Image 1: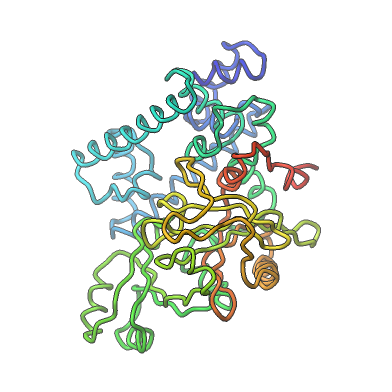
Image 2: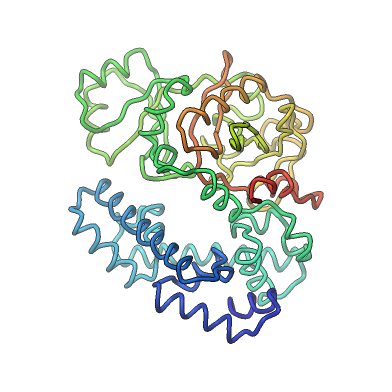
Length: 431
């Protein structure tokens, strides 16, 4: 299917595309799906393909190290587990870590895969009903939007890709452009953004909250951290997208709480932020955050795009965790679109509070932009990042940074009016 999609788009011979795809797989160990989804059909030399092979190897080693850190396996044991499980269960190292599959038996992994497939099939069925297209069209078009136009699969539905021409899709902000900006503007190790502990240490002045890590620490240190706190927010170090996050009420027996935390895999425990009343009025059970896309080129700072997220069903505002989001005017900080979630449903008002989205002024907007600029200038070589910012009653707090802040999510907020947003950053990909 991928060879067919690529050859149709490039107006070239399908067999030549297939030959190059198989050459990349057999010579440089690049999986066919990776080849298609990372647009390696544009590679013109073995040197470029070798570079991607190196990236894959580095990612594999990183996954093995993370697994070793989480589970206590030796590096050799982690490597063996990854190699065997990926091969026997036909899954990726990223899936093992993100889904915490290392905690499961082989039978449970089979069930996990079946559940994942059922969700994907349900999405295809919804898309067939919305579009009037058959299953073959939907599946092929989803693959095309990912490998040709770089739009993340998770945003296909909310971005209404099934309604769009190739010409329109080419104007849409997308995930692959996020990767290109990262490759061009982050010239040092991006672990400072991907490692939660390192991020908190590096950007401590912007956090607006205290934190503690359940590793190489004493009860006395924990007691000082927990003193006076009624509730804390817990984040597994090696998960993202709000996976595994939870709140814990602080009881009198803090020694028992310390022991409970120390018995868990590596964990970041943070002081709860007190959210600004205007943000809380939409939905009070989550900290509703703004993502600001920032870049430095020739020492000139630009916050070229932004969106805001709100929780809807739980304690997280992440779109992937059931939250909804709106596009924001990056110059003024006003909401300029209705809200939308992964299922593509539009909300003029928050479904829980009934508060209207359009025209809302996000508090402290100038301070948000100023702080994001200071944060981006903090580490030389990190010239591109998406900062997630919480607004408190006294100011702002940076929650985390992202080295691949998904532009497909940003684009989805403007899909209802068929407005491509690639123009917001296209100039930074040129030269």
